Image 1 (cartoon, rainbow, N blue to C red):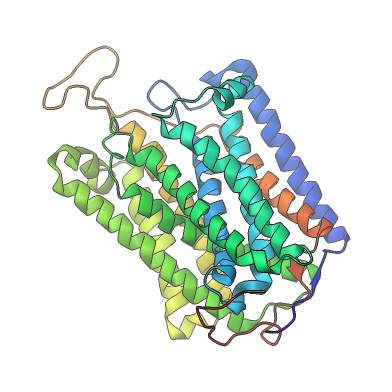
Image 2: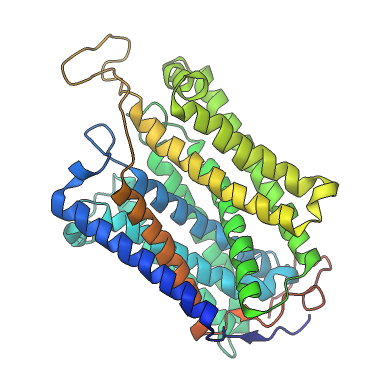
Length: 407
C-alpha cells in the first residue's frame, strides 16, 4: 500500500476570507434564532398545521448527509478498499461537522431551546425522537474514537473494529431519522416502512456529493492535487447512489398509490397543480436524479471533472428539494381525522395548508450549513486530516481484496 502523508491547511488570505464569510453567516443564523425566540414563531411561515418549517429541512438534510459522508471511511476500513483510505480522515471530520451543524439548527428551531435539558433527561422510549438523542450523541463519540484509531500512533489494529461500529451506527442513525416519518401514521404522506431504506440511500447520495465538492475545493484552496481517475471512480459511485435514491423513491410512491388510503396525498404530490408537484418532478426527479445520473454514467461526460462537479451540485440541490417535499409537502396535506368521512369546521379541516418560508428561517438554516463548514475548515487547519496529494499516483487505484486487516 502506498504511504499517505497528511498535512494541515496553511493559513492564507483565502482561508481567512472563507472563515470570515462563514463566521458572518453563522452570526446571521444566531441573530435569526434570537429574532424568532424573542418575537415568537409568528414571524416565521410556520403555523398550527406546519410545525416543521424550512429550518427542519436544513437540519434533516445535514443530518442525513453526515451519515452518508462517512461512507468513504467505511469503504476504506470495513470493505478494505485502499483507494478510499487516504480520504478516510476527512470523511470522519465532515461527518462530525455536518451533524453538529444540523443539530444546531434543530435545537435553535425548537421554539424553547432552553428546555433542551428536559429532552435530554426525561425520555419517552415510545417516541423515535428519544431514540434519536442517543443515536446522535453516540455518533459523535463513535466517529471521534474512529478518527483517533486512524490518527493515533500504534492504534492501527483497532481501525477495522472501530470502522465496523461506526458503519453499523450510522446505518442505525439514518434508519432512526427515516423512521421519524415512517412511523408517523397520522400523516398520510409518511406512514411507510420504505422511508428507512429511502433515507439510507439518500444519505449515501447526498453525503458523497458533499464530500466530492468539499474535497475538490479544499485541494484547490491548498494547492493539492486531486486525480482525474480518482474523481472518475467517485463519480461512478455517486451514480450508483443516485440510482438507488430514484429506485426507492419510485417504490415509495408506487406502494402508496396501491393503498387506497394514500391515493389522495399521492395525487396531490404527484399529479396536483401545487408547487410541491413541480418541485417533485422538476427539482427532485429531474434536476436531482436523472440529469446527474446521465452526467456521471455516459462515457462522453463521465470523464469530465466539470460534469462530476455539476452532477454533485445538482444532487445537493435536488436532495434539498426532496427533503423539502417530504417534510413540508407531507404537512400541508390535511390530516384524515375521521377516515372515510367528510370533515368540515371553522378550523380549516380538510383544507390544504399554506406555507411561505421566511427570511429568519432561511438565515437559521444557512447558519447551520456555515457552522458545519467552519468546523471542518478549522479542523483541517488544526489537525492533519487532508493528504498532501490525492493525485492518481498517490492513491491505489487497483481493485482491493475484501478480506484482511487495514493498517
